[in-house]
View (cartoon, rainbow over the protein chains, first blue to last red):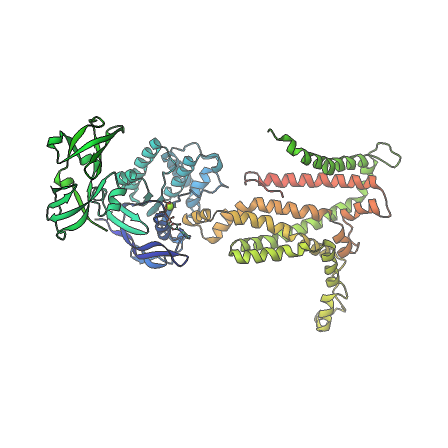
Length: 346
Length: 282
Ligand SMILES: Nc1ncnc2c1ncn2[C@@H]1O[C@H](COP(=O)(O)OP(=O)(O)OP(=O)(O)O)[C@@H](O)[C@H]1O
Ligand SMILES: [Mg+2]
């Protein structure tokens, strides 16, 4: 259905001869896709965006737009707009002129500009701020101006570098919905950078998990959450219990001192593996009915559930449950076979 | 503030070296030889209207030339690497370490009728060629003792004061802001006129102020390079204190009027800069 829009092939970025910031990135995304780059601070997300935007030339590798190599195309000729991580607003202009900047460059009629600036400011909840100067805005307001300034041009691709980082929780949720709506209505391709994994999971069509300049996993939010490829991804996306184990044979894995049925196969016999169990997938029971037995170490109320730490024979389990056990109580723990995720050790 | 007393030296300094002289100037300007209070000095002054006019004219020309040279230099400099920046800065500052009079004397010997330029051109046979083509009869180019030489002297002496503030402001512009403009479709010419130039205006304004104020009140330059042909305000004032025309009362009145005019000019310039961020005065 949708066609490929941008592709990075074997892109590497090396600063100062030997600081490898991006290591052989291969990535493509489709027209009108919502793609999220997710990873810890310093993993190369901004650098990847800058390469797509044309602000940085990759040390090696190629960037294609619609099948055309664009390594040497300057930023102002790319049909790409960016919401910068540090906003980069024009401090010598008022809010209206900031948002109108791109359309004035492209010589859009002033009446259209007026209408679209109004629309854009309305969308980011900043109607009435037109005449304000940039310096008279809070960080969150500046961030929203940066979003309006980019999105008002209806580019083919919008690069957003942590565009909601400075907003409070409520406003962030509102803006998430709003951005997603625009992205779907106008059909813009979003490349979205965040380190908020919940934001990534709720908004994206595709998530790219990065660490130390390498892509760890590419997939839909459901894939990434349910079938993390390695311990890093499992740890980074959502809460998880990661425990070492041994694959006894197909559909059978040994950890925490006993064998468990599982849904994985194709591992070498006796291969050492990492096992991921999500805290919400552990079920609490009477000690006699559990696959494992442990002692409740702490109970913390988290709003819609309790987070319970359970000390068992050789592992400390994190469990999420709606019914709180007593601290010090002995309980049983069990897990369904399809909630056990087995991964190769790295 | 608890430690107010720490400001005492500053206050004393300001009082002794700024307020007292100003008050003295004011008293003298309103005084006369016989010690009575009078406005006569200001009346006498009107006959020097021509000196005011030529001072402001030459200072304006010099400021404009400094801006035309200084802006491109600052812009170019801000885009160079740190090594070139450092070397260029030294080159710009170096002449300022030399005595002001010495520098100006140097220009005298360069520009004189028998000076370096004319001698070299003469030895090269340039004047025969020139006279042949234009039908003139020149032995040298008259350069010294012209208003042009005075402007040259001003530009040479005050150019660093134009370059430094402009360079400082341009150099501080966040590269991300320029990238943002490029991102929104602006080519390099548009980036310059819509982003860099407006953002550099505070530097331009303080550069203009820092060149114009000393230029309008200079006396040594016009004396040495203008040969007294073009009398400027500075010369006029100096004459009232040291010269034959000894009259400190008139001299103070002229100084006062000049200060007021400069102050008005600066206020107007500052108006232009409002909303362009803080104009800097060093
Ligand atoms: N111009 C540069 N010269 C040298 N190193 C750089 C340069 N730009 C970025 N880096 C390094 O590259 C690495 C990745 O930087 P990048 O800005 O892409 O991280 P990020 O994933 O966006 O992080 P964050 O979430 O903190 O914004 C960092 O270690 C950074 O120090
Ligand atoms: Mg970043």
